[in-house]
Length: 345
Ligand code: DP6
Image (cartoon, rainbow, N blue to C red; front, top):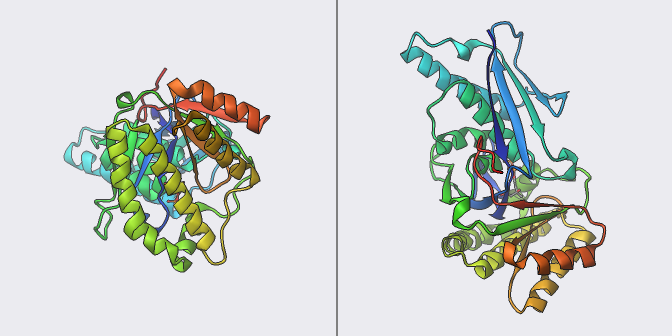
């Protein structure tokens, strides 16, 4: 017998950024973060997990190619999920012993991995959710986020739809460092994201290594985690609850700027943005100046691509301006989406 289950998981783009680990092995962050989940009709990872005594070893195929699963992060996810399944099997002897069978994971993105979009978040969230479905684990999305976090920090936020917080937690074992829901997608459904591809090249410094260098060498970073991020967390949750776009936008842009300032303050410095990125910032500023209020917000992760948040009612002003200023730049548009396994549209 081959046992099989599948899921999809969404991409999330942070508006208060995770940058810095206090424990690199457990992926425990130096600060909390908040993201918006993008709709899976536009961007998602589709993963099936199967297991059977006839398989010879664990394997993971990503977009048609066999991937290396020997890394500590993938192994941690497999180990944690197997342990939870083994606990179920121990309490109910009628259950098949799936925890002892080799796993075969097959994963596909509906967007090019090469586009430099955060695919590790959706990838690890889908991997964890698919195996949890296969094992019929009773764990909540928050419980599963503890496991996905060990795959990639930002992945813990892709277990939920809508507006999601990753609470940094305090405990050394990481048991309180997990994601929770700030608001459902339906709370503020007019939110839109425009992803502008400034470069499809693979990023220079990986987030994992970049954030370690920042923690070790940046003086500004201390100010960011002690004062800036805690303030931004409060302001952002408030903006989301009150559907206050101007505040949402200002905090997003300030937080992105603060994160990239810490990258520049890293020694030697790390630069993720390029000339196209900076042109996108100027375009957003001119859109807002022309509108006489803030109707667009930019944010950048560990790469040059720009994500612009705006509301559906301002679509023409925002998209029109981008097609004028940035010409041929390729982009994606996405709405706010739902959680793993629940396909919207
Ligand atoms: C800039 O989650 O990719 O996108 O935990 O080392 O896998 P690891 O890092 P990762 O870092 C994401 C950093 C970011 C900000 C964010 O998504 O919050």
